[in-house]
Image (cartoon, rainbow, N blue to C red):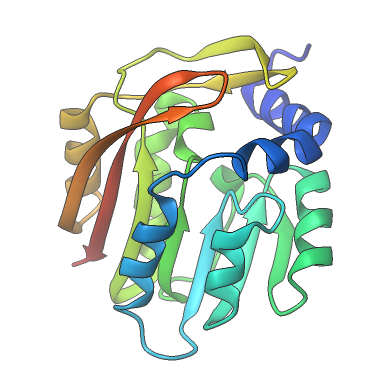
Length: 209
């Protein structure tokens, strides 16, 4: 297993891409409700960046059906699946923490379940870059962990090692405000994930000041 957290995530999702898609389809999370909240705020054919887009599931399709979508994922296998499933979208394999988009390029950025795979030291800088990529008044929809857990590797997550890290709610909010987001809505929502029991994430809908 590599020591680099990014490579752990990349290789992990390459290994479990199909299994992850089946698992994600087996239960209902709050994600679609929050995506619909975001889409209701956007003008037609807005430019939307999805970080951690995965293999082109229903959330990504809902965005691509109405807007100009650019999806980014660290996993080559996931990007391959997304391109096959959603030809209307554009997709790039890259590490989101190394992305370098033009300032003021997007009307919205979506980052669901991705920040939890980013080392703690890199989460605040990434939020700052996300803000720079958004046009003034642009929207961020994100999930953030709440456990305040140090960088760690779970040895068997859906059949592969996976890296996780998080802050608590207060630190999440501090980082978002420091990145110059106005918080339109935040909510911690617990729900059951098959094989993992009760989990919870902080859901964030914010706007660039």
